[in-house]
Length: 67
Image (cartoon, rainbow, N blue to C red; front, side):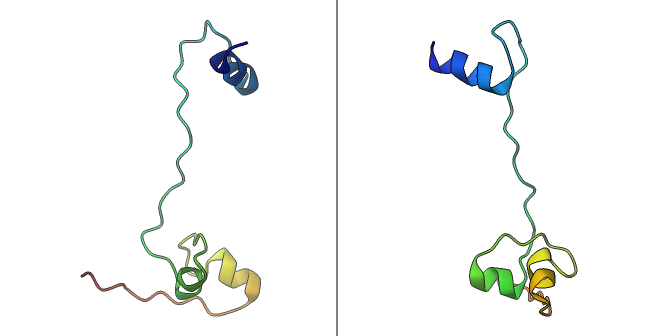
């Protein structure tokens, strides 16, 4: 079995399918909160992000100055 055939079998597609597989790309958050930026975590960009909410800490956003 070739690599392409194995990938199609894993994805539930067969060789006759002409649909192109497009991988999901997560939506980019325009700005991370201070906590997520400091810990290099994925921030969801909400008013109180999930990471701050889980830790019960204040979620603050500070604009980054462009160089």
